[in-house]
Length: 86
Image (tube, rainbow, N blue to C red; front, side, top):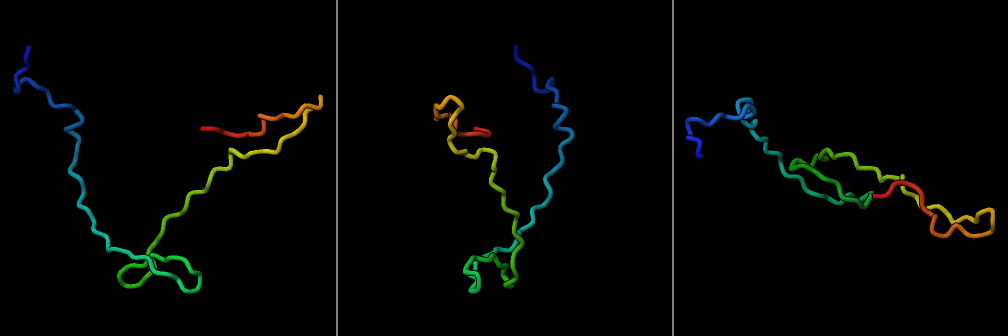
């Protein structure tokens, strides 16, 4: 059975949609070597430092531990890791 185009219902979510806002064109930045620290610094066309995002901290939940010997004298080889795994 085919539904005629005039019988189709517009989904509710489509009626709530708005046009995207106008895009903002940002000026290009370039990397310049800082002579004092010998690291790259991002600068805008006027030579001002560009704002940077914070860096992510590396997770420390999966650290390798040293191998220990159990009370019965056998080594615990194979159980030397603790923490989360993916």
